[in-house]
Image (cartoon, rainbow, N blue to C red; front, side):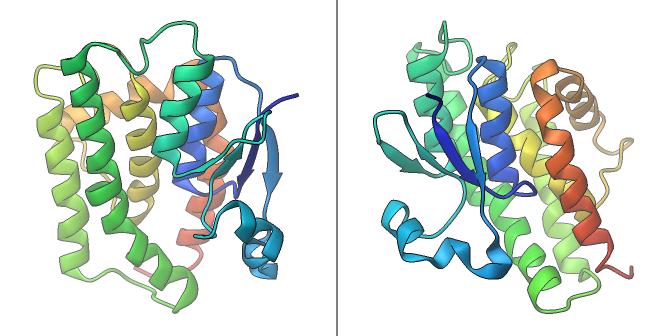
Length: 217
């Protein structure tokens, strides 16, 4: 019996968990929620996750967890064959954690209200300040990659998966300038070509279509 993941396909957070599960060879039982019908606000789902967010993981023994970063740490710690994706080495792990917190508090956080305004409030274009805010995220990531192949060092970790899912979505809001951010562009291509990243494509395409259908400029 596989762990169950409550999800919506376009969500960057969901896609990050799917990439991680794919990387460690873990099959997930996907249960897609219909947000338009308010399935995430139903009592049975609120009992699992009072914050009514996605993704939510229910493991085989009933253990329930939400927040994609916490889920990925848990899945790798329990199911992965080694610690490569989330190193036990204190300093290596601390750097991965820092990147994960950056994703939560900066990269994802800056895009979320913009996406919400586009999808729910009829926003059709980004303000210059919003574009600048997203570009600043790209600039930070460009700096993180100075002298590194991946976000937290020279091997791929769950920090790469989370940031890849987020930034591929951000790119639909503000296109990444390859000349201005060459390291970031190269990193995206590197992750994109990894086999585990294949599961990102379907949800990302849905997200891109949702955004592009609303934006006029």
